[in-house]
Length: 584
Image 1 (cartoon, rainbow, N blue to C red):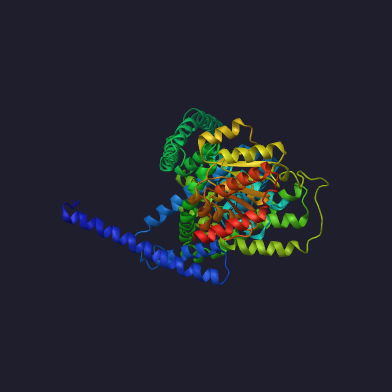
Image 2 (tube, helix red, strand yellow; image 1 turned 30 degrees about the vertical axis):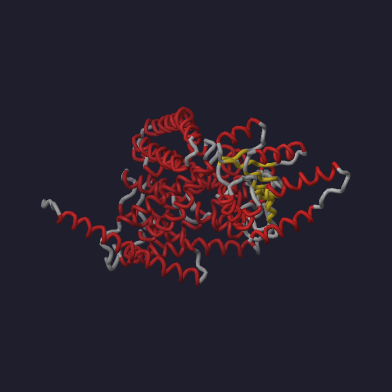
């Protein structure tokens, strides 16, 4: 083997770097062109990204072979699925699980069991007709892969339709949460399919208990105290580096225990969600996920080899149709057992009738263990990509079909009530940002008048003070991040009060609030009258400079001492507006 040294080695490295840049440039050009066409034709973004992946595959390894190397794209895709699993883990919380325990435990378990059994039986039927060649172990594994649905696609679609808080929508979310949580135990139990003795099933259970116990102990002994110490340092870059260190350390520990790195990221997210800083970590991961998520779906589309599709088209068409029918029936039966009407059950079945992104993680494990052959894996990938691409049309067809369905129920009862989850959600409350002197005074007034409120505070000392003073709910983080505002239930709040003194932080916070809600009243404080000049003009924004508030109080007390009527509010506002105009 020839080893390049000196300037020739540097030139070789430079040429490889330029090749990677050129390959990524081609991918971005193809992605840009197809996404523009998708948006113009009102095709779902996820479908457009999958089509981009197919197109990149044709340009690259599956066709024209114009790309020198697809490893950078695959690397970005692996980072994308890692950040997706990290965010899923962070969004998991015992509190959320308790609120939705019927949806998650009953609905999720029922849907997983039904889909796995029906999927396994369907594969054995196809094997009996000679369409596929699978034994019972492979059939059950493929049924498990079928049971997973796409959290990203379903949640985005429910949000776009405004159905996420309806009873069918909450059932879908509960089932998806159970599927996400089942990834770890399924990954541990998968090796048992290759062995016939009972010990093969017992050992993964002990291993899982050991991993969970060790993780909880690690979170209590190391992760939580470390984050508490870092937060007291009040340095955001140090906090970000610490989070990255925890994630990487968890990935290494999980890999040492025999888990995949992406499962390690999911476990890191779960551990971070148990701390007080989960919302802040989610805010860090959110833009990274948004950046890398398209790369993930493009890479999934690249897995669709048109040669496999056209070479086995009849078989793949039968499997896709069977997959959609099995998943639709299993999810619809779950909804009917919950006591939902037939029209709602049809919508739930249509929403979950696709293969999920976590199935790809589990499928790789199956290939490494020899459960799936490379040919079976290629067929599965093709079927999965097609099912994900068809999801918008399946959901639309289910919605149209449900409009003509009778108001029929399978059982005379309901497992859940319409108000089960809403009772745990804050409504008509006040979001109080900042717990300094002004924030404490506002909180005391709200507390004495029995007004529900949520405190958002970044400073660890003030956050501890808010808890010591029995504030009902305290959230760690900046209010200019959407996930923090979501945790504060801004959508159902009555007013938000910004008791923060940093005017530079005030501007992005108001902008973030308006992205979530354009109509909520905002009360904001600034130090000086001139500080209000750079804030946006908004009829629902009330800015109170402390110097005018203090001057008004001084004027009021002076007039009261001489027995005269205090200044009226609109007089003070007019004077402040004139002073601000003069200052300009």
